[in-house]
Length: 432
Ligand SMILES: *[C@@H]1O[C@H](CO)[C@@H](O)[C@H](O)[C@H]1NC(C)=O
Ligand SMILES: *[C@@H]1O[C@H](CO)[C@@H](O)[C@H](O)[C@H]1NC(C)=O
Image (cartoon, rainbow, N blue to C red):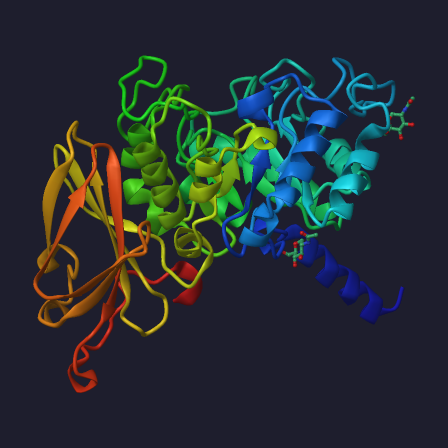
């Protein structure tokens, strides 16, 4: 072999060695779409999924950024075939998964697949642990665009970040090796601090136990209040997840996002105010926005919430990841900086108390480190009512409904010569 070819092969080997899912060019903004689980659980088939994809298209949700149609658990047979490959359930999918993917692609949408980094999936179908390459190859052959990768039946391969990393990294490499860009959505429920190690291998990672459509409730099935948690569980309320997510924004960056779990918008039980609050914070912290309601029966109100362009812009537009300024007994203040030099800032006041209330937001709590910016005036727009609230100085007074949220955009409104120099609160790692 001539030396040049040898060094080429060595270089190629080194390149393959350092493959990272977050280098797949996907999820440059948090992924948006719809997932079967919250509405259909295991009752899925070709008709339900295609029906949902068509509904998404008819509602024009794709024009707002909702792109992926993700098929969750229970799509396969209980056995692999004789050569060790997963087999789709031919009753649920008479024309096969590739056909389903083709139909979804024909609508201009992306198709998501599901498996678990365990012996079984959560629904006890075969999982991908020790079969990563075979499964990734099959998914690529079916032209899958997205993999939600769960954590059930992981055979005890968790407990330290390195053990979990190693288990999830195998699939990351297998996906990369297929040559097909497949968005890698890790679903390990925040175990072993994935925000510390997942950004180099995955596009997003769940940071808590499973969500439930309850605003705020203690539940032993979701025992932790804090992001460091030995038993992530499920039935985690909206406020429980928000409180866990608050300090984690600093770990997110382009192509690598904290996933606060699927949206409960349109799933009963949460009132209008609670749903707007839920949607706002998920957008502001740049969680994936994956709908989970019965999309074929979307109400006007659900559609109105899911298509608020100003709120979606906080997720998909030129804004940093939101952070929390304070948490009081009945209220929280969240902030989100523009990534340009405009000095615009988004201010969100959560009223998690049990009555409608008046709040005063002081500029000291908005411009935490930038003293000169506290002195000038800002023009305020309410991003839910679209009301122009005029120019305010020093403080902002807002009325917020019980379990509601005020989300306002503040834009510098003074004499341009007095415009304070804008400093970013925190730069994302990819901008340093
Ligand atoms: C595989 O990883 C390499 C290196 O990180 C990257 O350049 C490439 O785009 C990845 N390919 C796919 C298909 O994800
Ligand atoms: C198992 O499934 C794979 C992927 O669909 C296929 O290529 C292979 O031929 C199957 N093996 C058998 C023995 O049916």
